[in-house]
Length: 184
Image (cartoon, rainbow, N blue to C red; front, side, top):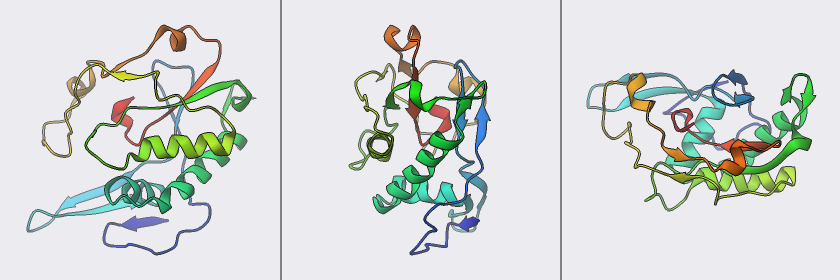
């Protein structure tokens, strides 16, 4: 299901549709539950007509409209994926996850931090501890949605986060939660 930014459905299906995608990077295994934005077109008057995936619209409503009711729908979908499909070399990862670590928010002025709320609820659903003390920002992030800049690889080359040795040297998996792929 695809939603347009003009649509604000009162109800979503209990299990939103999603299209998990494996992510490559400097980690053992990584997944995104879905693409956030399908298309975005600048309209007359400076507003955007944005088409999002169903999961992308839930994240958007939670993040930019402080709609806490979307958290359970997002985490229900994430928990289902982690329990049933998150595998490395054919083995379920859930028994080896030591903790859930929310990526520190890009906008610290937001009164409601959806990444932290998602991590807390996912921790409750999966019976895992949530560690908000393991990652720290080492530089202030430029909010690309506020300052339009030419997006290229240079925007993401410098590390934003300090990752402690306890995570780097661990034999366990850590589940890192972000609402923005650019933060990882």
